[in-house]
Length: 510
Image (cartoon, rainbow, N blue to C red; front, side, top):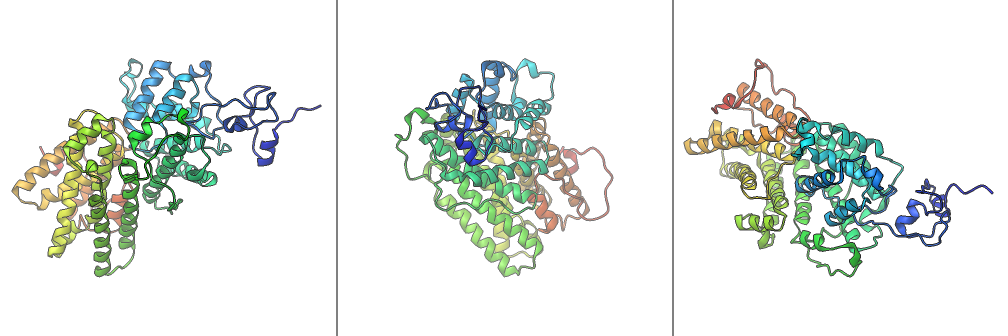
């Protein structure tokens, strides 16, 4: 009698039936604790799933772990991933569960390679000392790509695609980034991820956080390449829970954990709410550049969006206000970088919304244009100050690549002050530009995509040299400059200036 090549469940769902060895249940049945007709026993043993649910990937054996760096180094690199990438760039894992899986040799290999590809650049381990930090993750990224199986419709594949999309972002490959993120979004839709059946509260919350991560990524990634968004947020999907509560939970508790219905204290939940406003700001800036909106329409839209930003800020719990005491408090809880990331988003969205008034205030000065121009400058200054504070408070330093993009935009606002401000404001803007340039240079040593950021800042400076009067005009070029963070911008206007090495002296800074 010929042995069946698929169990009855996999035959019914018309998917490949994978087994680790004869006599064991297939991976699909095992992860769901289902009776598998290919197994010798009726009940399949449960496998760890808190950080990698609904997965086709086999758990790593001890011998397979050796294909990665040795266990201590691997653990250090995963810690660096959580310190500098996770929750700043995306939220994909329950940190305690994933660390437990890794130490047990049960973390999917594809995810390990993806995390290491992003984190190796931060390592001070002797094995990396002779390798450019920007190149250290290449081999890990390649192996992650090789392990990707698009026939595996699972949360693990979503997580892997988001990691690969992030690798595309930091390597300055927007097409690759877009494709991987699109696959992740489609798989999430196929699984109905926010409502996917979970085995415990950790897994349930993880699904929610991954879903909202994809919704936020979809906004800035789609805008960055000028493609339609893929996801429509579902109004009945709960926002992420408080981070400290989530990190204290464990899988063994099942669903016994009490969860507060109020999610306002969650930093990630506040990011989700802010991201909705960013979506509208991006849409407005693009529409205003491409269509003939009346001045009244433009002012009405900006006033409404400004009110939404103000309302978001006013409704924040006291503990989430931008104060030094709150920064220190979150730093003590290990959440300082996430607090900084939240406010970098808020201040960046504000400078994006009000940026057009830097030009309008010079061209057609009115009390209203002056008010909004000052709001743009205020947001840019507060963004810079938040980054400076993050460098001063231990556990708050933000080194992810998008810091470079938002800091470039804030730096152009400082250039505006340098060109059109008064004595004291000019001196302050010069100091900020000097410090920003140092930060951007340091980030450039970590992320290849910072080459693009620096090229964009240089292109903006060349535009200022050609025509100061039109450099800040909110036209199609400026919209691309503000939102297409992964792409170089074309030269603005005509009359190329001669190319030469670019330094701070070019904008009047010694």
